[in-house]
Image (cartoon, rainbow, N blue to C red; front, side, top):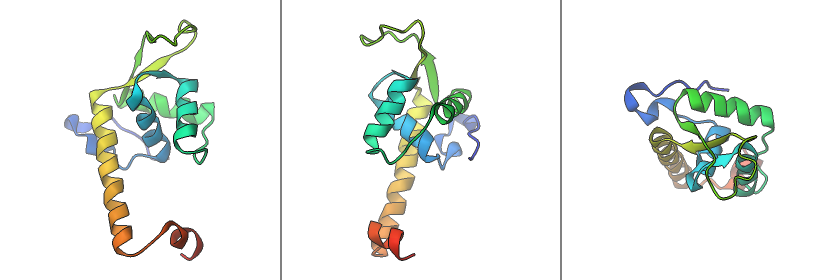
Length: 128
């Protein structure tokens, strides 16, 4: 898995490309702060079960994202925080929000290129 390093000179593109797990975690946090299990549930729902991650993958990615300053740990002050003393909550930083937007732009460009070349999802899974 590519290593996420601290963003150089406040440049979110220095972390690109993001792994699918990191991208999905950042997207999940765009709705607001969440604890780890809620992040896993959101990613599962957002990807319709296509991206499975266990606790080791989630918390290893979260640790790297914290060090890269893409996310930060919070107090878990939301209304749904009845167990906040036992849970860690996370939210996007400004850098994280800019990084996920930069990655989205990179992915949109890749999809545009694939469409110009008349590739479809069926083409890529069945005939490459």
